Length: 219
Image 1: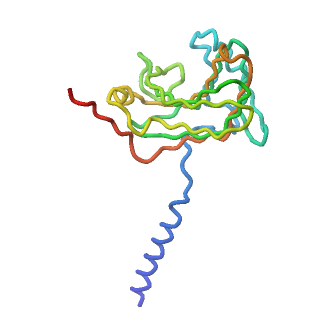
Image 2: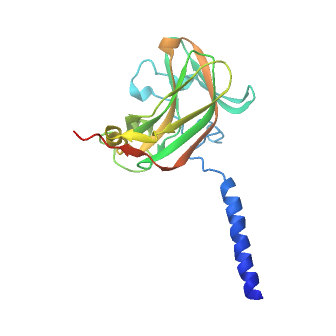
Image 3: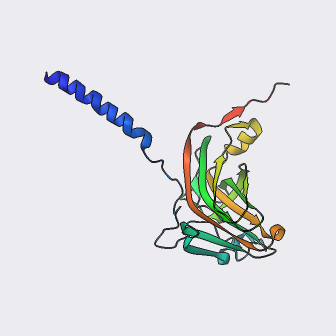
């Protein structure tokens, strides 16, 4: 009888695990995704691009502010875009697993013509030795994901995926060199004029499986 009860307990225990597993929360890979760091609400985020020497992005970090609440969202990053200026925000740098696919979701509010959102893939810049997680100035961009555009003065749920489920052999030659990734929100102010955009509730998760490389047709 004890043997039967033991087997029954194992079976029931297995059923409990099976019932619980599907509702376990996905791991958010984005550091400080809710702008809640006690050191700095924007700790880790890519905001200061003075090192790049791009005159239209100098002082980019001075146009960012933190809002504890904005139109129904909490912990909001607000980016002011001066006329004739290019403004961008990048998530903290994340390590990229070769061939893996990732999804980023967040809420975006824009009162300007257009905000472009996409994943960026990076390798270390020439001369930068491998080590701990690098700084933005240590990286060289080598891959761009598909972009999503948003506009209109209301909150919108955004989703971008990197890379596509199927990619060409040429694209994979670049992708396999990617070691780090970010998600960039970008507005070319010189095109759209002055305005603002806000982001909140950022989440980056790893998707199951890996991208499929489409073989080129034989000649």
